[in-house]
Length: 349
Ligand SMILES: *Cc1c(COP(=O)(O)O)cnc(C)c1O
Image (cartoon, rainbow, N blue to C red; front, side, top):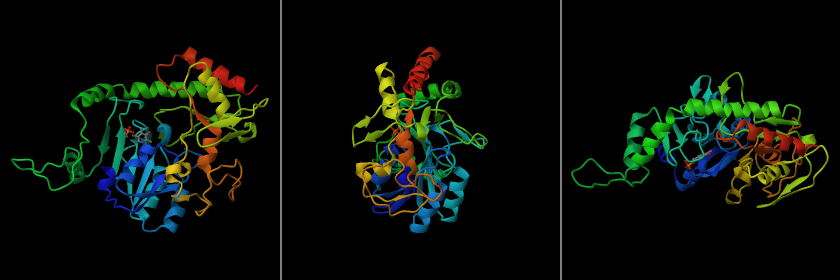
């Protein structure tokens, strides 16, 4: 509905976060959008404003930017809003993972013209499914109310002037969500405690936690992730659907760590694989802070493409290569988490 409100037409180019879940992009593509993916920055693991600036230089006519806040961490909102404002582009904010997170004291999901929250089963608050569109534009909200309930006109009979959708939330789900809302703060506090326990536990390892802007933002800490320092990565290669690594003393890699986490029947995940590396989007453009037009290859060579500042020029793939999502469920006990910390530590022995 946000994509429709933003007026996306078939074949129209839009800009989108690159390191996100496919649910950010799918609805745009349903409307026929042709996404250009914008690389990620290291400070919050979200859309890099410098890459977005480059993208507008390449494609000045783009009018829609889809911005996700990965793992519940707000991105560089002020910088991105400023750039979009200068180019008269509408922001669609995907706050599906970041419900309750704040940037300069304001909740994510209120910075775009159209904003989306998810109540899918894995989110910080859930109704088992469903979601929410947020906008300050009353006319837009009324349009969505109509479109999402089969576009019925105000007439004594079923009268239709526009295409309709069955996107309405069921009353059962709405009831569950309303019951859950009061637990949002408590869930965030528990998620934050999990993040802090990991950070403390990994203090002496050559790893860092998923970062955030400590002075301006308060994530909801939906997922705790870690990133292995480049010098402490053992060799790891990933094909389309499988991974291999060479164990090495004092070093590790996401594949090894995820294997040991899986071996005690806990669940970790690789970092969301960047959209520009997804086979479905192989032919779409991808813009980094270095620019665009990189050869579209399907293999990632660690440290292969290095930018002017000595950093990898494909930040998303570097984080995908070295990072992983840790078990972060609030039902996990501190003892269970301690166990995870111990086995991760052992990977670096
Ligand atoms: C979960 C999620 C969504 C929305 O998922 P739905 O199942 O459609 O509610 C959108 N974007 C991101 C980044 C997500 O993680």
